[in-house]
Image 1 (cartoon, helix red, strand yellow):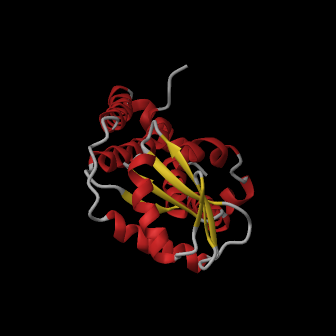
Image 2 (spheres, rainbow, N blue to C red):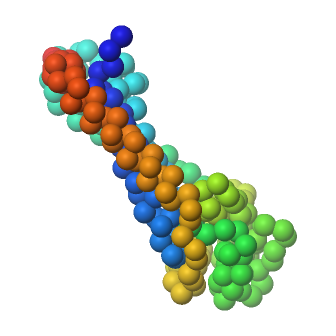
Length: 218
């Protein structure tokens, strides 16, 4: 069974873009801090193509398609975007620091925490900042060389997390690290996904046109 090059491109291009961004971030000589919501949103965009050619197309309502025509795709993508945004908003507070190891982050975080709350307490990789209303634990993903500061417990101060993010971002600015050697892997994956997508479209122009007609048919 021949692969539909149009659907393949829709599925692979967002993943290739995500891998490219990860590769470029890990080539940097400095850490990068993002909120957990931004991290989840980026992942949602990366998976959007797979969702489009999978559940979104599979469960496309026929009545809405007949009524809206091709505009139904915009409505479904808007629904998916809203769902991703909702998940990002209701998830527990989290900060993600890319391109840094736990050992490199620990003294920087300790300094920032002490500035914000002299009464802060450490217990292993768990930190409590009672004045800010923040309790968190550190999760390290060594294969990606990033560290997450994830909320521990249900009672958290959003303002406290914002202050922590600002202070930690300021503390990380002068920090310099080695470029992550895994950056080359992300870049290779990105190039490979794009090459597969483009080659399939060039090799099967008839199937490409047919796929476009099927997607846009109503």
